[in-house]
Length: 362
Image 1 (spheres, rainbow, N blue to C red):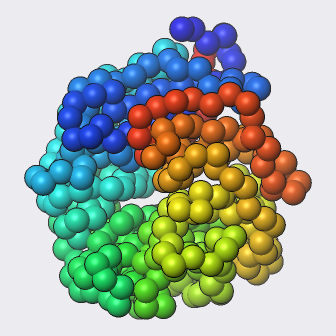
Image 2 (cartoon, helix red, strand yellow; image 1 turned 180 degrees about the horizontal axis):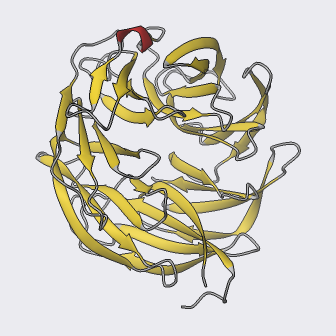
């Protein structure tokens, strides 16, 4: 496959669960001008490549591998051919815990952080100049519990996020209802140091899962898996100051399974995925205060929307329904934030993580 000369192209990378055995773990699609998806490449011989991230320069893809297994998992590095969509395996490094579920990369692309769920461990890795990963240079373990059993019997480091200024790292601990804060200094031998003043304790039973900062760097938003809510924050110099908790589901339920959260590129809208109810919540963001106002809900037309992504132009949104195995694409109304489903769906086994990157070929 060859993109047109000097034409901008957007690639969609899809990480999947593979039932614990080697299979097609990563698929690469091109996003066409009409919002349809065309498969370009698939990476075989991967086990449970369930979360992905792309380097800031777009040259490298990183994936957790061997997640949800009885042994410690790993993080794998790949080189991206932006013309063909092909991935070339570079290397992998082990994590210090079972079930790595999240990866985060800092703005200069030099450091990757993994979060492990079953064993609440965070690893930090330095990326070599060729995109490969050096062994983990720092390991941080978490402990504790909260009120909801069994989900909060022990700590669970579900995700991590660098602050907009790059000076802090936050760890969403679903098991203890905490967002742990660390100072990040890549010049120090110990890159991460605990920053107690920045650690936030959520309402018991919330289960912080994923976090998204606003493009203006002033606000942040956490989706709480167990309470069906989104917590909005004002951010300044490493401190997260809570603004409000907003209910994400359309209806009250006995159990909640909030999953993914993203802010539109223009900063006007926030979206959150609600498993079980299988909806996307749409919120308008007040740019002067960071507060949220519910716009409505849209069906995900599938079961278990674990991940979704907004394309860099903001025109389209793609959701991955893990249990029903389908990718659904919507056109976004840029003025209202509302979503209109497009007709073409992609069938995939257990899609679990979506990332997009826009390229310009020469």
